[in-house]
Length: 151
Image: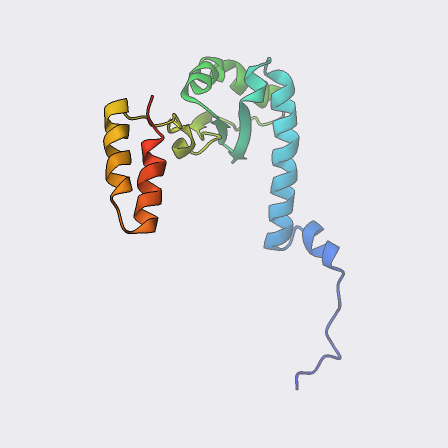
């Protein structure tokens, strides 16, 4: 059994605020990101600020995410002004680069057309005739359902 007499019990919250451990450093980075993003979104004019998020930063680089190539192009035109703002107003003097990545909000598969499929009346009539001759009930039901998709 391990000796627990010399173990120090710390509150869990202290792990998040202690800058001497990785978790504390990560929490501090997240707070810095949040503060920088708030300043950036106030600086950017609407509607651009609703399509942009600050994804990450290092001492020399900021990464911005946007939800479409159109907004990414508009952001690229603003890079010199954003860079100047972040260097002077946000005290990021060593900042040199702004990268922009497009991260779509919706899954591209969600954009597949959901139009109703139809068949001609002649095809529907043929399918219905074939369905009436089927001895398999499941197949007959499926064919009759398919026959209802005529225009």
